[in-house]
Image (tube, rainbow, N blue to C red; front, side, top):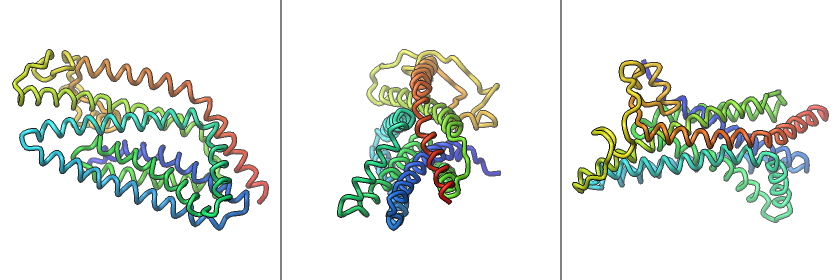
Length: 314
């Protein structure tokens, strides 16, 4: 039986990030409809396709570069692999966290910003290119975050995570189509709240992974250089003493531990440094995220008004 757990995290990430891109695309198309420039819909569709293709291309390029660096490092191969996992993980955490907070804080300005950008684009001679770039960049940004997440969380197995990402993207596009094309009522606030909490837990799990890889990198460097840099146990270098051993209670290679590992970064062996780092990150991010949720109400209210006015006109 195929283990589908690696597909769950990327499905959730792309579902949320993809739906954000769907909102941007929907608002752009609504603005074009209001000014009777529906002929530019073609540029919107081209922008969507270009953003998706660009994300996939960047993913393959980064994977090839990372693999090439790791396999041609000689005696430092193991060290380079761990350091690359740390760097990619930190970038993925930073970008996903930033987007999680950005959507919440900037939601009340999103509609106005997009309207202004569309209006400025229509006044230029190259309106088609401007609309195309606006949509393509929005889709590419969300897709690139997913690419970084896959590279950071799944170092060896990428097929199932990629399938999960594609399924999440398809569902996000379908929900956006239902919302803007058919005026189907969706509880946007509940959707973004639930997806935001799941994404917060998933990103926090990356913190555990980054700390583990950094600790392993220091261990490997100590073996190569013969310098004693560690103060932890034999299995840990900088993370301190072991505080959790779930090999018998909740192993991370069996259900349900394997699901918790795939989704939230659970590990059957945890050290003090990981617990402290995880707790600090999720506490600070939760505080910032929930404080910014009120700003989303303005955007959701505008989308409802837009759909209501559209259905009234019909």
